Image 1 (cartoon, rainbow, N blue to C red):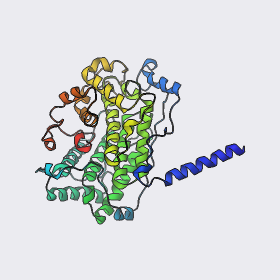
Image 2: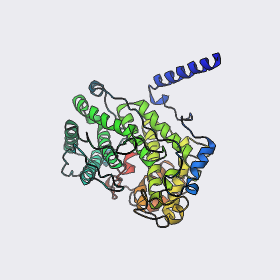
Image 3: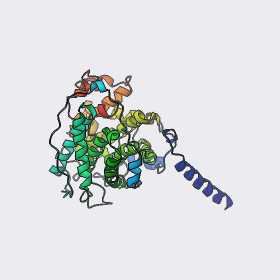
Length: 413
């Protein structure tokens, strides 16, 4: 009994010490096994769900989904603490003239259509604007445009935009995927020009963004291995790096580590790859978020999540599977995809999957730029030759990824 009590006290003291010691990037933990790791038998059962389930999601729960309780900060916190852009320093000599389109009015109340695949058109238009604004904030050389962008973001904050209707009605009522994409576009745009906001502007914008990111971070789904779950962590990481919330940063790190534990040896993700004609697309989304989190973390803090390994599995394996899908979508998709009437059959089939993921997999260029000796570098460079190592990189030809807001090569080297 005394031994149990002593162990409990040690654990409490250890956890308390750990939370207090997050004072700098050096205190971030990239090596310790995270909580909630599945047993080896449950992990293998999750890897093989495509063999036991008749349709997608008709299987036991593996790794229950969970959210994160992001700290609510007061106005003075934002007023007294400068923001820092989490993105690498973009060279001034590469900036150029870019024009800014007309700004959208703040969307105060959202009316979702919760049918699978349906979206709110006004939200898409707003996302398009913030994507463009993020690009202009990153590569534009006009202070006037920066002021216009700040004015729009502050107007949305003052009107308390997105205050109602962004959560779905089912499950734990997480934030809708399209709304997360919109919130990410606003947050990324803010992060791009983070250091230009003064104390009074941060006092207005901080609490509003804090509220939206808290709602996103709190969101959870049936399984933790879910592309939407990784998107919430990607958003949380950007917020944490921008506002110096190291606990939020550590949470995102742990999500990436857990994902590596859940990933199959070939680099595929069990829950997402089962989704019929959209299996490759959702798997690509999952890997893209994880890759960009690791890349962003490495750029901003010097901490390298690419070194985290579980029985030979790491983020490197994930890139291999995406390449397989690009080279042979049909054969690759058939490895794990099963019937998915409510979440994958609409835009493809098991034998003829959607290839939309290929266009958005430009994030592989970030991987290749960090690991130039990657065995499939030539495939990636050839596939995305319009943008990879282009001497006119700031004038990127391809549209920004809807998920990452900016083209990945403008987010992370």
